[in-house]
Length: 224
Ligand code: DX5
Ligand code: ZN
Image (cartoon, rainbow, N blue to C red; front, side):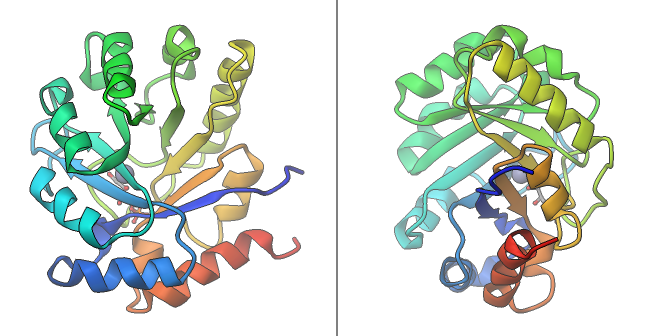
């Protein structure tokens, strides 16, 4: 069994957008380590969410680092703006960029942590040649675009494959997982190697984000 050390990153996608400051404060009281921000453009994924002005507003109230997940085409055009708006972690989809090495390098040059994201159908080996430069890897455990979807069970095997690719490259970059995580499966994803856990619906879907954040953490640390 792993040491079960992990960071919790509530996704504000399922928060009340009219009360983002209140909801962010609630998850921070509940023990959130990061605030996960889902940026969607209506092209790379079907949904449209938020852009740099909202990230800038969140930055004013959040006390935890902002983990900005870009689900957009041509993310290179917006990297600087998102980092200037306050993103401390920026992840881009392997499927969305033709020059992944260049994009990750640029994020690092801008002063943020650079993450590479894999869709469920993208194999772990797609990371092989950037494993030495990524600061973190994000494994999608649903097809991106919406909160509240069901966890894809193969993602556990995917986590192990990504870990093997990173280990082979001598990288100790953490692996983040995103999509369909709840109190019932969070222990399994931590055991499979994820150490940054995103949760949207499980945190914000039931009206008590502070308690739900605590409950998720407790679901991992509780003895099996
Ligand atoms: C999905 C987003 C996720 C989403 C997770 O496209 O990237 O971050 O908010 O939400 P849940 O935990 O509800 O699957
Ligand atoms: Zn996300």
